[in-house]
Length: 292
Image (tube, rainbow, N blue to C red; front, side, top):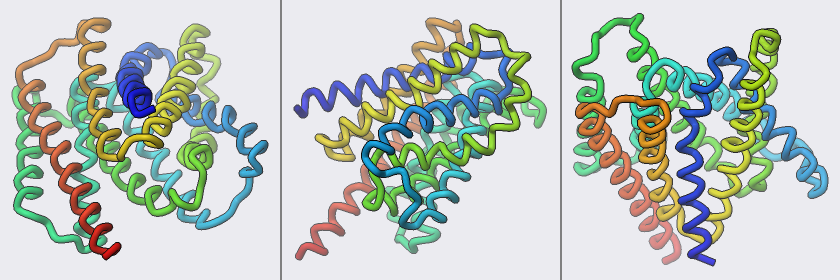
């Protein structure tokens, strides 16, 4: 079963890499309308399952979960803006800085000590961001600048929601967690339906495919893999999403792969990967010490 779980997470990462391609395939749809599709489809799809399993109820720390869902809606909007305004390579690489922000937030709010290795990798990531943007024209009105800032904003938002949802994972089923992730966005993005008549019919179809593929299939595959694999293995395999996204952007959209993106992106991904690894090792040591 472990082999199937590995294949499931690899497939999950490769499918997730199509995020940017799908988003850029809906130019007639507003960012808010795309976000509405992305959030409402998973909710509607999972409601029957919640009803069957008698999980369709508000319980536990629901205020915390609704707050996390609201932050996730903002994060999702920024994520879409990132892919719309800058290249897929820039957006996905900068989004994967989120482990750095998870580490930073835990240091600030949970008073965790920062080690020399973590500090070194954080500095490496910052250098990677500078290298990625180096050579581009600096302007607050530049599409690249807007997209890259949005990607970092989405990364920070994701880091916050990871910590918030993580504290409640033992109280909710996987389907409930996915619904909570999306429910605030499904409500908040509803006013953007005013732009529905201006969207092309074929792009509305892409919107449905995008929402179901990324919002349901990707999460289902990841949770299946996570059931049989360690969190360290599953999250490490998800870094294939970056490779998949960059290759698809190059092959399908003809996006240029600059030396700055390769070098800067490598710095960011290496630092993000090793900071995640250091955090997981620290958590494992804590668990062992508690067990003693």
